[in-house]
Image 1 (spheres, rainbow, N blue to C red):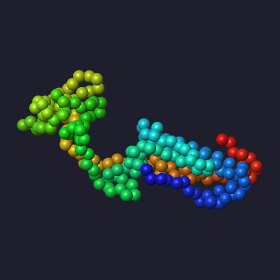
Image 2 (image 1 turned 45 degrees about the vertical axis):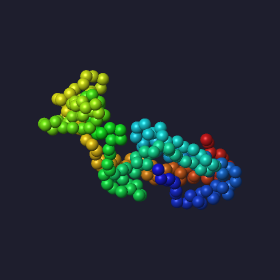
Image 3 (image 1 turned 60 degrees about the horizontal axis):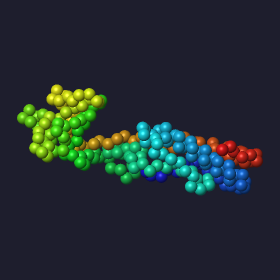
Image 4 (image 1 turned 180 degrees about the horizontal axis):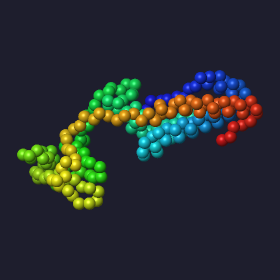
Amino acid sequence: MSDFKITTDGIDEFMADLLALGELGEANLDTATKQTTGEAFRMIVDATPGSQKREWDMRFPEKMVGEVTTNSKIMHFLEYGTGLYTEAPDGKRAKYKIAPKFKKALAFQSAGGSFQAARGADGQVMRNAKGAMLFKTKAGNVGLPRYRRGAGGVLDAPNLGKFAVVNYVMHPGIKPVRMVRNNLTRMEQAYDEHLQAALDATVKGERLGP
């Protein structure tokens, strides 16, 4: 995902003033940076959906430098969106094709169930004379698709309308979550507050808490 940096008006002056006050100023600036990074981390994690929350981390590669990072390959797509909704700087707003990688077709089921094909879905999709979808397996067997609800029994022909089987789909994309960008203003405000607190404490000869 693209890098984002927190900037704020007067930050160079703040930092110069703190560093000019010696070791105490430097220590308080480092504390302010850690505090801001911790707040930024919590804001981003709170805005991140589902299990992806666990993919964020924060680190401090050197004094007075804090980073919120992720190795997740999908975080970029969550932040900027995809397809028709992308806000990525180099993104192209268009539907994109999703095709099966290991089978001959894609199957989509309604909520609460999972799709299974009679005698395996390792062959090609077919339709009978009435237009109902069938699977022809590599062994030459033809059977109706099946729909399984949870751990219960298999439901056949009456439930064909509960799912669709297609060779590919043109996906419209997902809308951006803006986990980082929606929080940038709050992060800047937090940094302002922590830097001011650091400067006030240093002038008084005090050290900021952990």
